[in-house]
Amino acid sequence: ALAVIEEEGLRCIKLLKGLLDFAQPEDPRVGAVNLVELLEGSIALIQPRLGKSRIVIDCHWESEIPPLQGDYYQLQQAFLHVLLNAVEAMEEGGQLTVVAKFVTAERRWAEVLVKDTGGGIPEEELPRIDDPLYTTKRGRRIGLGLAICRRIVEAHGGKLAVESRIGEGSAFTIRLPVG
Image 1 (cartoon, rainbow, N blue to C red):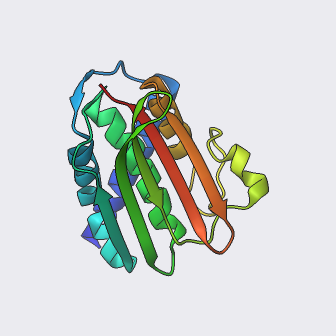
Image 2: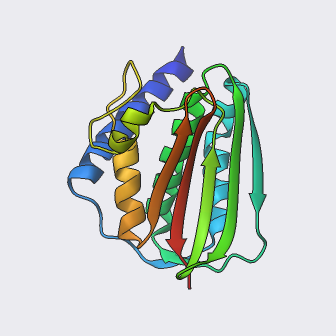
C-alpha cells in the first residue's frame, strides 16, 4: 500500500511538473551529451515497469555516435515520454525495441528508434498525438507527454516522427543533430 501511495505521489508531482514545464519551460543547460549513456539511464528508470508489464526490451547501439549538444535532463525527459508511451501501449506485454545510430543525410544526426508491439494508433489520430491535452488513452491521462517531447526535441534542433499500424504497434523516431 505504501508503494502505491508513493507511486501516486510521484505521478502527481510529475503531472504538475509537466504542466509547469509546458507552460514555461526552463532554459536548457547545454553541454556535451553521450546519447548511449542517456538512453541507458532512461531505460534503467523504466526497468521496473518493464518487468511488471511482461515487456522484453531489445536495445542496439552503434558504438561511434558523436556527442550531442544539449540539456541532458530535458533530453532524458523527452526519451522517457516516448519510452513510457510505448510501455503503456503494450498492456498485455510485448517487445520494446530501442535502436540508436549515427546518420549522415542532409546533416549529421543521432537517430533513435523506439518501437513497440502495442495496439497501434489509428491513422486519423496520428496528426493530433502531440497536441497539448490530446490523448488516445483512457483513464487518468492528460495528454502532455508527446507535446513536451516534441517541444524539447525541436528546441534541440531535432525532429520527431511517428509511424503506426493498428494491431502492429508504433515506431517513434527522434533525430538530434550531433557535433
